[in-house]
Image 1 (tube, helix red, strand yellow):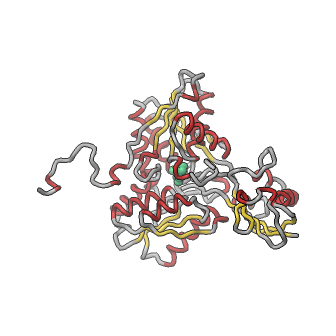
Image 2: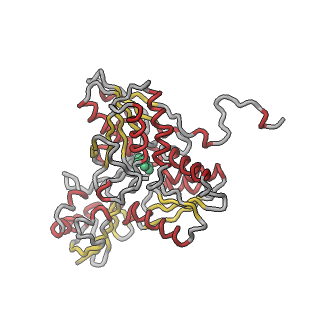
Image 3: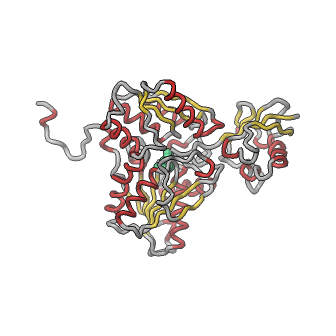
Length: 91
Length: 308
Ligand SMILES: Cc1ncc(COP(=O)(O)O)c(C=O)c1O
């Protein structure tokens, strides 16, 4: 049930510089947990102490913002893409 | 009667760009009532006509390029931006008769896009995943394909960016505090604000401490850059700051909301980071006169998680 997770540049140091990684999971939350299992340290950047996706982190399933879906409970299926978009940096 | 012979009227600007700079300094006492000898001031850059601190470097870069003849009216002003510099170029371009083309990541807030387009500038969107560095690289490509068509100010590498702050921001702060500033705090994006203002304040008084505020490597503070995970701007000079403080996204947003709700000062995300840093410095230096920069207002963030 692998989805493609698209990793933004500031987080690629966790993924050995890969921009796309294949991760299993039935929901966005499971994908994040499995991402952590594969690339330790990345989850804490995306999820707060309460286990929720941080409010400033933009996560899309295909082209939909998960804030307008079911957040971390948003279901995903094989072949979907989960995209993590960074903030707009300086200048 | 011809206009040129009419006497200048006090407070009347011949062009919108002459309203850039000379921004007010706001004294913020609310959060330091337990520190009676600390003073915190914020330079209110939202009062520039384009709505941000970036009007200053944008104007300086364009004026300097006109003076050196690198920019002529047959060229289009092209640069990559996170938004505020783009708005500044678009406004100045409209006022001075230049076409403007801007490269921004597709993830930029809709407000910024609309403002830029309202001024008549053209937008090229870059891959949101690659962030601002992606916009920088795409902009380089566009220029390489048509080098004669464009003038690229290149805000990340143009010394006129910090120069705007050396010539104006720092002397304004020096005068507005009557030379009493002891600590200067600014957030890091291109680093022009920190490097230029900090450098000149230290020239006025070498004892002034300069503190840089950086975001974490993965953050939501629009306009700021963590230098460890970004293309480092050519103008960045880390010898200017004495100390660097990292402020989390959540803490920045929370402070921006408090400034808005408790003081009626509707500020942008990076102002919250600047204020949070100023409060840390105040705790450690209970007699300090601290000046920080509030780069823009909160209005352009209505669609972002700051207010949602
Ligand atoms: C909102 C905001 N804050 C801070 C900055 C950082 O300013 P500088 O580029 O001078 O470092 C920027 C730069 O674009 C900005 O847009």
